[in-house]
Length: 112
Image 1 (cartoon, rainbow, N blue to C red):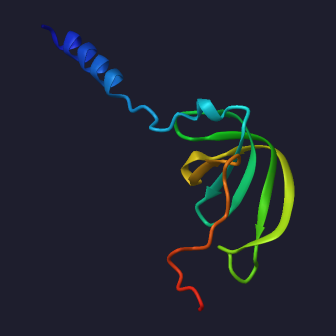
Image 2: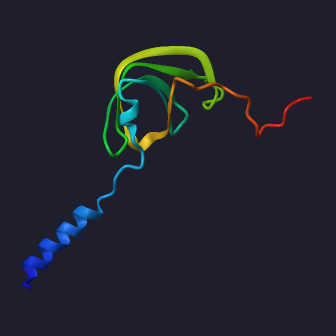
Image 3: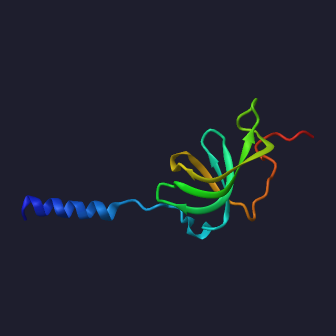
């Protein structure tokens, strides 16, 4: 084998080892999802597209505004963003809006 054929074979192995996304977001296309980002921001919208790096395209997007005193606490206020592209490196959580419900934090000591 020549050096050039070894390089070509090595290139094929790299193609085979290319990582696949562990999330299959295809079942959420055209459905409403909620996304949490590093830093505490949250938004919800209709998933229009995505790529293996989790870059997301959301339509009819609503951002949930945060309390100025506590950036991890959400207020009731929202703002409409419309069509947005979310950078995948900042995505922390993706969940469907359908079937989602808020529960009390089980790790916080309850008064009583």
